[in-house]
Every structure is written in structure tokens, then in C-alpha cells.
Amino acid sequence: MKSSSSDRLLRLRLYLNLIPVLGIPASLWTVYTADPHQLDARLKQVSRTSIVLGMTWLFTTVLLSAGAHSEFSQLATLRFWIASSFVGSGYFATNLWLMFRVYKGRSTKLPGISQLSRRLPD
Image (cartoon, rainbow, N blue to C red; front, side, top):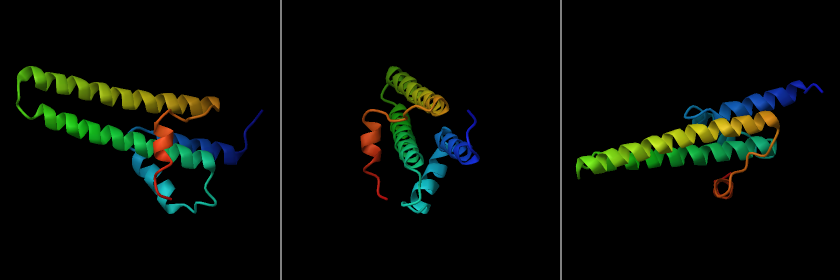
């Protein structure tokens, strides 16, 4: 069964919003400039999830980098950098997994993240 051009366009916009790092501004643009009554529910949900994931990744990386630069000890610095690399890898893997779920037509809701993303202002 072929999908219509509007379905393909929606899927492309979902992919764009889920691109790691670059999807954050696209998601912010989607959520805060679009008419909330005309915005597709799935696009809105994916955009909000992308914003929460991206901001969580950014703040966590900044805090871990600040901890690594505290010069407490070399072992602590190494642990902060390793934790930061796990956070970054997890963020990228989660976004790729969500892209795969979009491709399969499945839900993109994440436990905890989706509930938090609903609290973003309209």
C-alpha cells in the first residue's frame, strides 16, 4: 500500500525533528511557531520528546564536563568523561531507535520523557 504525499511529508518532518542535535532547533520551530490547532498530534508529540531529550542531553553533558574540569582527581575526571560519553551515546542511540519506530509506524512515546514533554508550554 502506497502512502500519500502528505504522509511522506509528515514522516520526513518526524525524521528531521529526531536528528540528534540538529533536530532540537527544528523541534523548537515546529512547536512554537506552528498553529497548535493545525499541528498534527504525532508531530507535536515527537517534537516535544525531541526537545526534552535534547535539552536533557545538553544539560547533562555540560554538568559532567564541568565535573571533569574540577580537577578533583584524575580518576574522578576519567569517570566524568566516561559518564559523558555514555550519555552522548545513549542520546544518539535513542534518537536512532525513535527514527526506526517512526519508520515502522509504531509509537514514539518514552516512559517518563513523554509525560515530561507534555508539560512544555504551547
